[in-house]
Length: 90
Image 1: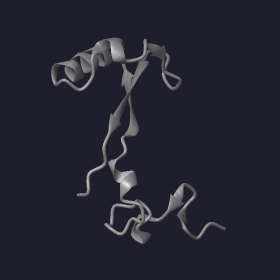
Image 2: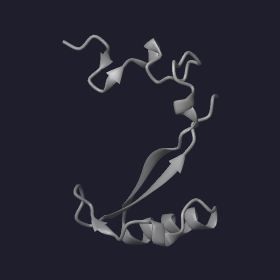
Image 3: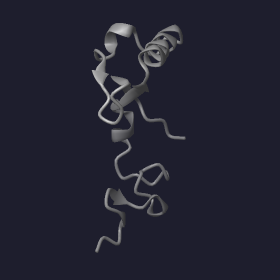
Image 4: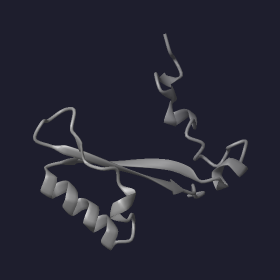
């Protein structure tokens, strides 16, 4: 039985996220980490979302993957984009 909080790692209450200011390696916080954003919905909704992300300068349309069928709904598509972020010490 896993008593560390969850099957995915330590509990947030135990400071497992490293965001409690007690991280042993502060240099790791300065390295960019990758975050994947997934847009799933109807073709018009996903394409509108991609364009809105472009207009707020989050990601260019060509950075997103080509439309793929959604595994959960045959009438929907999905597109993803991966962006680097630098963790702050909030």
